[in-house]
Length: 413
Image (cartoon, rainbow, N blue to C red):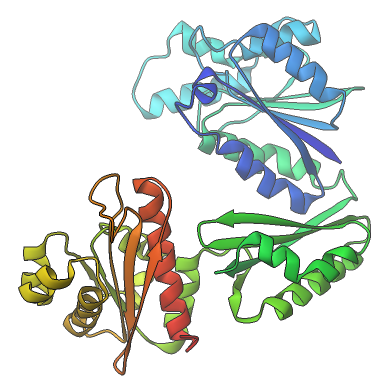
């Protein structure tokens, strides 16, 4: 069964906000046997909405639309849907009771504008929105199903989980499943070369795709069909074949992030790690602490930016700094060892580099980053030459540092 997602809002088109609704919907729909075939973003105009709806209903079984249901004049979705379905608005009492309950909770008076949010196109069915004042709307005729919802993510998710997923779960006997393998340190072009034989002989309905992100590549194996067991077996066999060929470059299965993988490894071994960051400014610590329960393996880190701070906090000697520079093997190894000892952790990681846009030299251009990882026995260091703007260099450095730590934990370096 095919789905098209329509997001409405000038704010999305001009880049003022990012469309996270579509990504969430895609992830939830595929296990239910619904395949997203298109995502369309349109402005807040009646003509754009009616045109998009007409096109979508002619190529999809289900259309999910978000946005344009607020109480202000720029929200014209209901007017557009009335025009498309050739109907008037009706007042929905249940929706109004929900609005009254919300305003009563906040001890506020209901304005006429808010009251009008209980008006929905006469041919639609109201979908309760327990987290907001704008109900969702379910339209169904011979052309297909259209569901219109607020653009606010938590309200949209609430309506989908309460009123849409339960209704569409049994409508499709089509199977759409995928499995992801996360690979580190190998470009997608090289991965493709190594698994050419597998891609040449894929089972019917199976496809391999590559999703690069910094030094990681997610290799996704997707399967489609009507026999769930057969589809799952096909994608599992292909995934295992890919993992066998790529060996130690495989970080994890699934859409797990590198910081989650690190957390699982450290927890399983009852070990800890700390970080000394210069050019990343605490970004690695942010990644680590974004994982719930990270306090079990992460006691703390330091951000040492200036020469003086590296000397005072980590004991890097002024002679080393002035002789080799902060971005050097000698300094980053000292930072690494010191942060491990100071925090009494099993592993230490240090990063020092030139993120840009200024600060580079002929010998050390922008993007030069030294990293080190150590345990109680030894220190391993490596220099990277990155290409990108400041934020890209920071984020890429953070992920590379975590990958160094992963390899050290597994004795791969």
